Length: 446
Image 1 (tube, rainbow, N blue to C red):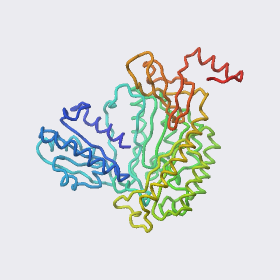
Image 2 (cartoon, rainbow, N blue to C red):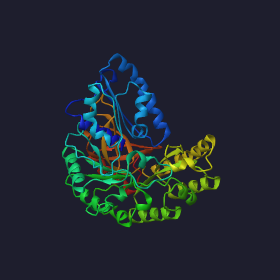
Image 3 (cartoon, rainbow, N blue to C red):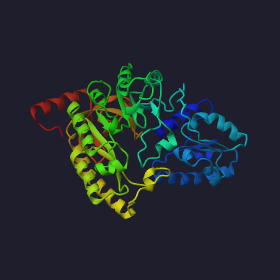
Image 4 (tube, helix red, strand yellow):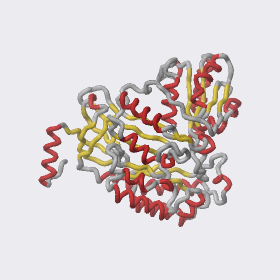
């Protein structure tokens, strides 16, 4: 979501600024921040400190801090860093051109308002990348769930859905610019439109986006398990563009801890939805988020998380130690665990997932996968370069082939599974026929 916000910033400034790679040559530096974990907040202060000497050498340089840490800290950032000119939250980024003019006139400014009447403006400007392959489209902003560990409602506000026609128009515009894959974004996309009777449900919005001519692949994130409806599950396998991948954060395998987290589903509820997903779409790839060492988590609670990982067998997880975030209810809970306990539990989770992930990815070895080529990693030899792309199941695949394949769908024979990616061999049309024949005869394809 921050990546999307950064691209919106570039679009807002498209008429007046061009992006460059060297901060020492910049007229404007914007740091877009995240506050979901404490480590990300610490990174801000480290990065901003590196830009302080640039401001001394060039007083005309404008430095801004945006995003969730800016929303959280507000004017305190200006007091702490006298070389920063402006601070703005997620809603304030749309006032950026005005704030830059104020900075150029020598005025420092802060905009961290969170209005319940806020509407995400439509921006008519080219995408920041040349020849884009993938693009993000925000469908809603904010969150109403108030999970006890999460700072999002405090820094991004309450749920606000965008009008469906604006979303479809943005998708259409991206496809016209060459985008092949769209990811719809929101803190909880499953509750899209719930607070405005004029809007469709999220499954109905997926139907509308799927109908956009020229869109090849469609994804969405993030889904809250409590709002994962049967209608949404049914869309997997029904919509041609909707990819067979779902990121469904579980956070803990213990119902008791889920209650402490205010997640409003139980372990059994979550597992029932996983079962239904796999019944409707047997090929679906599942990923999740895990918090290790939440306040009050006992060894028994932790082992329930371990057993859930073993049962669901995710292709990939994103796991983190619990960290205190300002303004959240979890800070006041009893039973905060020592850092060494949280670290040990996180290490055990990651060790188990490494084993599970390799097993899951290993199932794709010797298979031919359709890959959307996203990146050219090596540009020295245009005819035989390292390319990177993704399967419909969201597996990263590395292989060699012509650089001209970027943005195209190709067939790749998967030869090796790694922990978080696959490597394989690009197949031209003749090779595809040969591999198919070998597979039909029962011979191995490597």
